[in-house]
Amino acid sequence: MAYPSTLTDGSWQDRAFVTIIRKDDGKEVDLHGLTDEMGWADGMRDFDGVPTANGGRVRENQAQDDHTFNLTLWQIGAVSDEFNEMNRPKGVEEFFYESEDLTADKPYSTYGTSTNREDFIVVVLWTNDPSVDSATDPVEGEDYIAHRRIGDMAQFIDATPEWSDRVLKLEAEMKWSPFDTQGRKNSFIQDYDGDVDPMDEVTVEYVDDLKNDELE
Image (cartoon, rainbow, N blue to C red; front, top):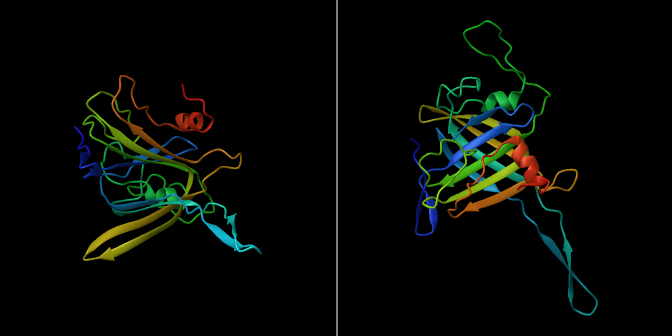
């Protein structure tokens, strides 16, 4: 059984589920097990006020900034192949380096710097549904509610180990544009208030349908 979030006085508290999906092969890793802190910025949509000759002002819009997702987590390892067996934040540095394992037939794994850059889907879920184990899981039932955020076409832009108070942590940051090259949305917010129909499971195909406005 999972440990769900709690909705208290109109705010989500306690726990959130965090999942990263690699778009190329659909491999996903759950980071909520040992995530310490996280933040989500939707990107500023600013404008300049340009004065006119008669004393008025004209708004000159600026393009929306990129979206970012950052988190600090306890660093246990870099291999995501075993994430089903170990409830630990595997995969962050593997996904950042993107070199694949360089040590075949060894009892350990090695990753190196690479010019490869993969696209990911970031999913964060708050819910009081006790059956949920991952941010990508469906939520169903009149007794449960949920709030979910999805970011598409994200890339890891930073992964910095931090050693403080004799504890090794990892600070990671991801970044994506508000729209893709075809002008489709890259960020979504979903709220589920309890219904007969479930809040859908998140997959690569589901996000593509969401971007194409093809959800049934």
